[in-house]
Length: 96
Image (tube, rainbow, N blue to C red; front, side, top):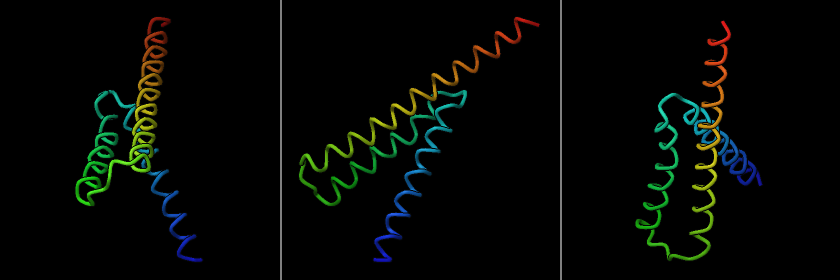
C-alpha cells in the first residue's frame, strides 16, 4: 500500500517537473529550446520500444502519442506567450 502511494506521488512529481521544464523552455527567446523535452520523450519511447521489443499495440502507441502531443501544445502555447510579451514590450517602448 505504501509503495503504491509513493509510486503515485513520485509519478506526479516527475510529471510536474517535466511539464514545468517544458513550459519554462518554451517561453525562452530561442524557440528551439522548447523542442528538447518532446525530443527526449520521443527518444525514450523509441528506446523502450526497441530495448524491450514491445509490440506496436494501441496500449503503447496511444499514451506515447498523447504525451508528445501535450508537450507540443505546451510548446506552442509558450511561444504564443513569448510573442505576446514581446509585443507588449515593443508597445511600451513606442509609447515613451
